[in-house]
Image (cartoon, rainbow, N blue to C red; front, top):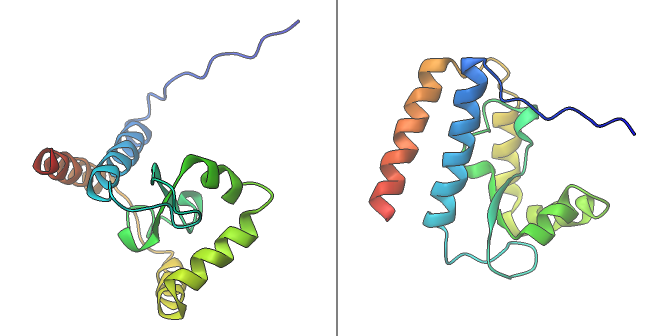
Length: 133
């Protein structure tokens, strides 16, 4: 039986910084929103789901407006068979004004995430995490 190769960490500095910034974003909002319930089922929030997927919008990747507090179980459902139902529930809960703003921001295809901006985000989230501890 042939084995699949292990994933190797990227040596691309931009990808390394992006992964670090993503991890710090999750850590920060887990601390900041520790008492928030899952937006879908009401259980304890465990992570932040990106309503507009990270791969679909650089502009919304680190935007608090795009983050949904959610539990692991509902997160797997959002990305699975029940995704449309749960996304509809999120939209109903957040409202039309929120959806229009998300749609407007998603249209901004000129937004770039240069390495300098990623370093700033990493510094920002590290400082905020230290403040919350």
